[in-house]
Length: 85
Image (cartoon, rainbow, N blue to C red; front, top):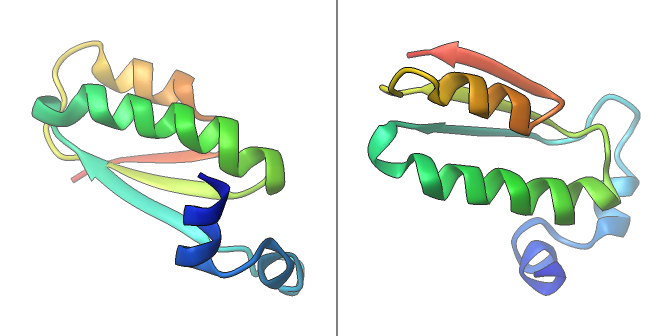
């Protein structure tokens, strides 16, 4: 996974060399029909990416989640901005 991250974003040295406050922000959105996949993505993001850059932020757009799912999204990710689209 680390190689895939490096191929997509460049090396962690490149990201770590960014000025303070210039870290990338991740943007995603999901509806209920892909909710399970998004939760796996959050788990992966938290276990892989956050170990390298713990303060990276994610902006999440609710594209039609069902009752109870928004709470699970909010609990799964620390630096998450949640918006209904």
